[in-house]
Image (cartoon, rainbow, N blue to C red; front, side, top):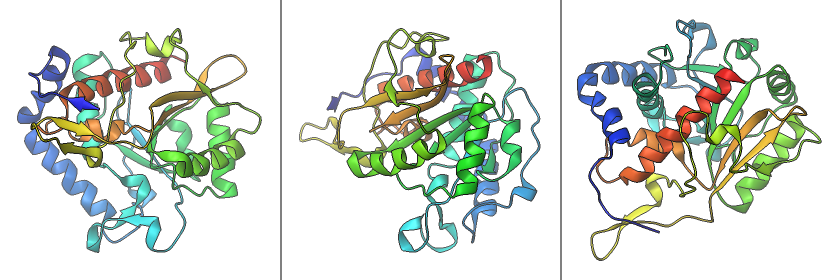
Length: 280
């Protein structure tokens, strides 16, 4: 896969120009995130912020086993896999939602444990690295109830056959009997705000490298899949970004090395996911 450096398109420009204007806010957000994550697997839910707007981006805290492979990073920045790309992914997507929609969007994101009943206060949940999650019975039960009540879960940033098997084993315990299917091009999700007829794979930054001609290339483990799980009335409950990393595309929105077309597409998908969750 090859990406030639290009000038910013209009949608991407509208988003990234915000970075300079809110640079101080970004630094404050990062500082709060480091403070809440430092020295522990996850932040204390008792200190989590109260919803303050129409939409508040919520990230799911889940168990990822124990031992060396259950965390990433090192030193005081060591954290569970659920927190990868935080806070940069949230920071950029939140600013994009404000610029590209009429939603009243809160300044900061909320972390909610999969065993915390406050999960029901947030109609949209974001979960990354679900190829590493190990859901307990209590987590499985509460996520099932959350989805049955009308919640929407977006899972992202997992790759290959092993991580797919880990994810599906857990999600099929959450929603037994519900099939995982490819999201059809006619689905309202792909047209609710932007018409998303482009199925270009969105890579993580770790998958990118410079080719011999100076072009940015990507090496991924397999083809992209936009999959989903629907309830009995046809509502999409779980949106599945497989062999993709939209969180990285949001996180690196102002990184000139990351391919601009991929960030622009990731923003469009992110906006559609949120609008769908808020209206279905």
